[in-house]
Image (cartoon, rainbow, N blue to C red; front, side):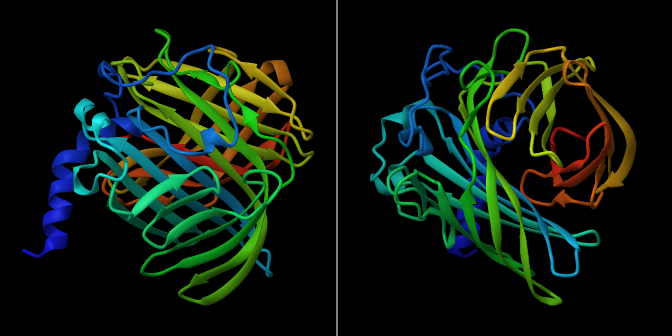
Length: 359
């Protein structure tokens, strides 16, 4: 048994509980005692909140992109870095304390086309330089996967992005064309009827361009990207088992972030943020959004909704959302569905969908 195998086994034994819960696979409703918890009166601070929040149990930097190649083929791209903490006692360990450091990291990368879906995963331990995030200058990395800010005036106003797997790689450039967007109550995003919450904001206005390296060769692409930032310690209620999350860009320039969190009884807690083309936001609390699965696809032995009807009456929105590739299953340590979508109806456009907790 080599060192790498031992490390992976240790990772699985130590990380599975917190990370699985962290992604909404149920039980991030466990007690947050000893960890920091989101506060409704907290005012988000930039650029410092682009960095890590080690006192909280879980957080992520989550970038998705809708891309188009020279022949008008559509692609999707994902780059995600997760951070979690082993235990409450780990909070006492300094960031530079080597293997005693209790911060743990996981990276996911993917490229999706209408006919293929490629995934890769990286695992790392904090304190040894293998992964981390700095706010100024901004850099988020795990091994050689990097999201790095390049803008000199606006923090994360411009960035480069790199990742690779066995069958794919990408090298991209990003440029923000709009402001940061705060979800919920000035970035305090409620996830359950009993008030569980996270701090949550996005940059939905990135232009993105670069190259994909796929089995068929190098493909130059352009498109739009969306970066989500979120951190918490216990964002879900005990009964909640998973979520369906949508980031949608309309043809007229407006955007929508929408999610529902499902519970064991089949109920859903919903939330949405309508974002105008110039960055103004309107938040919608539980019940304003209606999310209805329309078609199930058999993926990795599970029945997963890959067609949805989404309605937001206050905005006259009634759309049908279809997966670009219904088989966009993230076959990683803690599997879930993630991929690009298209939609028609009262509004048209493209976006991304994440679904967790489907057994």
